[in-house]
Structures are given as C-alpha cells and as structure tokens.
Length: 254
Ligand code: HEM
Image (cartoon, rainbow, N blue to C red):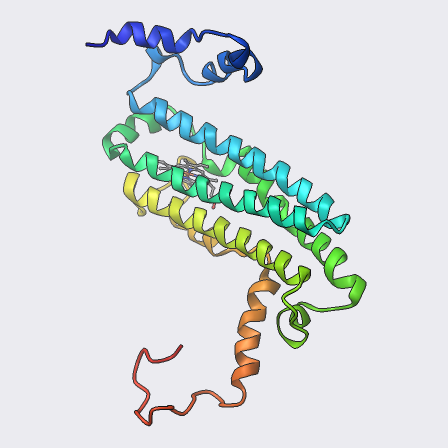
C-alpha cells in the first residue's frame, strides 16, 4: 500500500545529487502547482503536458536558428541532421497531445475554470515558432537558389537533380506538414474535450482554429507539385484516356 501523502512529499522534495543539480530538478518540479492545490488530480498532467510542449518548442526554435546558420555556411549535411531532429520534435509534440485524451471532459471542465481567459494562442513558444519559417525561407533562397539563379521549378522539375537544394526544400516542407498535423490533431483534442461548437476562454469560436490548420509556411513548395501535375498532365488535357479500355469511373483518378 502506498501512503499518498508520503509519495507527494517525496515528489516535492527531490534528492539533489549532482544529476539533480545539473538538471535543476528541484526548480523543474517546482514549476507545477503544489500537489495539495490541484483542483483535480488530472490538473498535474494538464500542466506538465503544456510545459513539456513549451520545452520542445524552445528546442525547435533554437534548432531552427542553428539550421539557419548552417544553411548560410553551406553545411547541408548538418542542416539535414538538424531538420531530422526538428521533425522528430514536431512528431513528439503531436503524439503527446493524446495524453490529454485520457482526461475526461468532466475533469477538464474544472481545470478550465482555473485558466482565467488564457488561451493556447498566447503560448510564447508557439508565437515564436510562427515567426521563424519566413526568414528561414529567405535564407533557403539566398543559400540554395540565388547563387545558381535556379527556381523552385528547376529544383523540382525542369532541372531536377535530387541535389542539396532539393533535399533541404523537402526538409522544409516536412516541417510545414508536421506543423499542420500538430494543429489538426490539436483540433481533434478540442473535439474530444470541450466540443467544437464551443467558444474559447477569450470568447472566440473554436472553429477559427481551422484556418490556422490550413496555413502553409512555404506555399511555393506546395504549389510546385500542383504546377508539375498540370505541366506533365498537359499532354493528356483534363482527363486521360484509359490504358485498359475501361471507361473511367468515379474515384479512378490518381
Ligand atoms: C484539453 C486540452 C486542450 C484544449 C481544450 C485546448 C483548447 C484550445 C482552444 C479552445 C484554443 C483556441 C483559443 C483561442 O481562440 O483563443 C486553443 C488554441 C491553442 N492551443 Fe490548445 N487546447 C488544449 C491543449 C493544448 C496543448 C497540450 C497545447 C500544447 C502546445 C495547446 C496549444 C495551443 C495552441 C498553440 C493554440 C493556438 C493554435 C493555433 O493558432 O492554431 N493546446 N486551444
């Protein structure tokens, strides 16, 4: 049998040897509400998930700044390694949202009363991340396109070489895609917890988040794919003849 009070006491008074001192574990564990003040046991999870997400966003922002420097220095291998890290972090951010799906809508309502009119839209990490892709795109163009006067269309199609410019562009679009997936998954989390018909604590309709989930950081990288489909498809016009002789039915288009 566990003595809950004893466990709580031991959680809140960590044994600070070198490991704990280096990682500032005492200050880290002090960033959540005192356990005695939680409005419901699920509130600890709610705070920790949000705090961990802020830490991942700190690491993503830091890493994107490193990537920018390596792009400027032409260090593509380093750029690609660090993008792999950023992509993994984005996946972690999305995966971790599902922890909050273990919280009942009932338990969340009592936590929600604690939040004032706070909104995820005020997340410092998220707001910072939103500002980084545009300058990163300018850096990509300056480092990989401008010196050779190539366009995105050259990199992907007309002068396609599967080269460094292509690989870094794919890393950028993967970040963009994973960011959208985070936003979309977060919307499902809202479906599960407070329902989509509701209003945020700022009184805004939750549906407004749908526009953000459709936002693309690097539209040129998305558009090139559709342009290629049009260009390559121009040989058959709007609809291609069947290669089996069967009439084209609904849902047969690839
Ligand atoms: C039960 C869990 C959650 C609920 C009910 C919830 C609810 C909401 C709502 C209603 C909004 C819209 C706010 C507004 O319009 O002012 C919002 C935005 C946001 N939330 Fe959450 N949220 C939850 C968990 C999280 C978590 C774990 C994160 C972690 C980062 C997060 C990050 C954000 C962000 C970044 C936004 C702005 C999104 C955008 O502009 O696309 N939320 N959330």
